[in-house]
View (tube, rainbow, N blue to C red):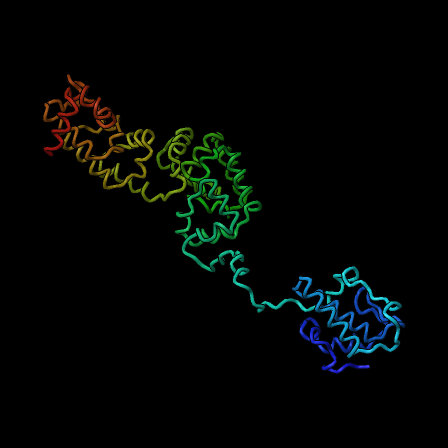
Length: 414
């Protein structure tokens, strides 16, 4: 028989774990297992079984654990059995066996219970205990927001990579965020280590040439093999890569063209060309326009011969990439003011690698003391090399024959 809504006990209607349709469906099928351990037996009415099943459901979902609540619930059950749900077979309580609710209740019976709603109210104490990670920003102007979420960035920081410089290039920052350290970066690091780079050099190198992570490993090995075929030793290649981080990012064809250009333009031997590149590997990675421009300046404006240019650039390779204005101003002062001829300048090309104001200060001090004599054939000769390379103490003691205090006082008069 079916029960009306008024016949369902009040505690069962307040449980909230089953619907009215589920109650009817379960109650109208006596003889079937309703919950684990509760079967409608012949001596028990379907009403009693339904009552026991409803009581189990209530006991599972209830949050009251005190003995007072349990006793009051049992009293309501007994009252409901005697008044609302009379048994079909009037058997005595001694002969009627009631199953043990706590022992027979199983988690299998909770499968049909609805899941907790995400809109379920949360107490203030529970809300305080909730720990939520900050959301990952969809876009940012700095990589700092992603370091805590990216293992790749964390390990690059440990290697010494300066992310503040890389994040200035949005494409580079996006590249690093897409890379996997184990798959994309580790093999490049092992390659650089095998090449001869030290651990404390990796951070500086990767900060400048982060694009190496987008290079194919086989291409990198091919470029190293090409340099070795040109008799560059492994130590030479490691030094070149440290001083010119983008060297391995250029194809074999470009490297070959650059080597051929300097050998042909300067008319150097293979060995001298190789030594020139080892000392200034940026010649292979930088623009050729400054080199071509400076070669014209030395020949046409400064009046040096081709063999003199060869001698100077092999001793000071930076002369090939120096600023044109600096070259002309230095030469003008040394040659026209200090009266030093071409052949002496060729012997000491370091003068082009020295700040002009330093040359002026020392020359004026020597001229004030009457010791500005740069002719090797005359007494009290002042070497142009020592003039630009010695520290102030040695310059004053050996060349000017004066104290450093006197030199400093003279500089205040300029």
